[in-house]
Image (cartoon, rainbow, N blue to C red; front, side, top):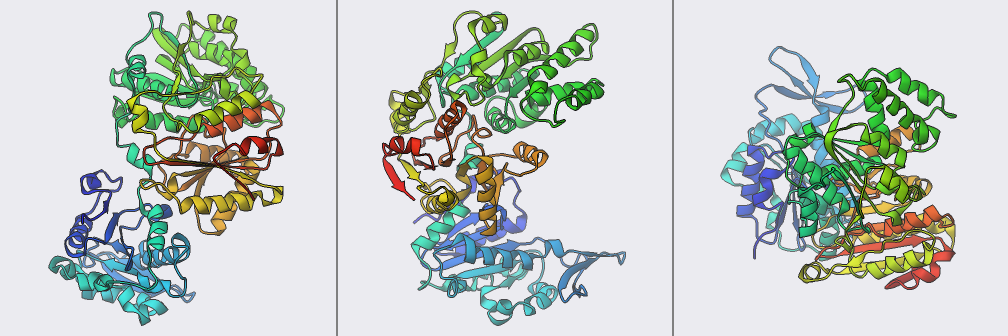
Length: 628
């Protein structure tokens, strides 16, 4: 049988952290010497820990290794008491200067790996006997084993397991790697079976080891159909284009690809969205098209409207005008709504561009492209037009069905005409994202609960490509009878989803969407259980804003955010919590959340956890309905 190595050998040179020579030697050794049933995971994500190598055999056990290309002869390494009863790793250079290396102490790292493997990533592994199937080893390909043993002797003696069961904590040196001494690097490799290890335990762990789907996808070119490709390679005579379409029709992909094409031509573009997190997603899409990452960083500015206004003020020496504007607001806070954003900022921008019209001081772009345009106010669009160079182009993409802020109604035909547009909208009608089984469910939701809104329901894509990507999809509705049990229901669903991942996805591919209150409690609950989440739920508004700027799907963590912040994104494993749909915007928000599911030939899954009695009948129409 062929051995599983992940990433595959042809992808190892594309790792974000390049492999060292020593790591390559060890990978080759394990590949040559171990039986084919041993799976090899190189720099696996593992909830953000990223050990160098993890080995997995479903019938035998687990090995986790830290590989250090340190030359222990280059400086003096030694152990020292810190005065509080602990031993710390120290270094002393040739000038006699001593400094701590404790933060890099590989003993601490392998003990952490072992502990989390036993207590977090393998929940079906017996905690008392499970330690016997886990090897946590150190490998130093550039230093003699005797020298490695000397440096780390005190640390090993201080740990009961290392002292009493050294077989499970091997230390290997340069001579062991060069001679291929597998029995020294990994003594347990000779074992053929285990009473404790099982396929179920292995499957639990694989979800944490596999490279997330989104990270894999970032290495692939952006796929566009003929209509989408036409929109990325052309412009209108006057330069103004508006595109509408339902969720999943490829609007964001078209916009990002157009920006990438313009960047490759040397043109400077501004890409704008309402929410901050969407900008990260658009940037990831853009780098998968024409321009390189370096060119995109240089030629495209990704900003939300508020951020662009702030940049203009600061870059042109008008910071005081900007600060006075916020100080004049009722609360002085940089909120995403209110008078300052509705009227204050547009008015300030118009004044600055008018006063400096004859100077070359105000930023100008070859193109301005706006995503999720239904969230924009016409006054913002008119303000952005001031930054367009003569003969430039502007693109607006929108889906009025996702009217979560109640702003889409402002885009009347009169407002559109005054915004520079002529002729009808360009329409993208087919959903390239949604699994076919989801389309009638979201369509029925829109017809039942969005009756007073302009509705643009996705259509199932026809043809061979649709059949090719029609993978299995799991759709569940979990109705919570008692609201106090909602948090436990969400936690239970996360655990269930972790154990039922698609074959090519990992735990970090799971996304949890909810309001801020339950979201914060959910993050705290998972943190208490050792699961680290990439989230945007901090109670401090400024910290939450920073979290939104750092929200990337490629991060090796479970994602948790609000449906507002996930607008425009997509996920293959999705949990949505809904507490109430009393207001029209709340209904539109749930519609937006339901349409974030990404289809794939290897499968996807969506669970809605609901406390809304109003939605119970609708939920009962889903393929799987349960009560909690």
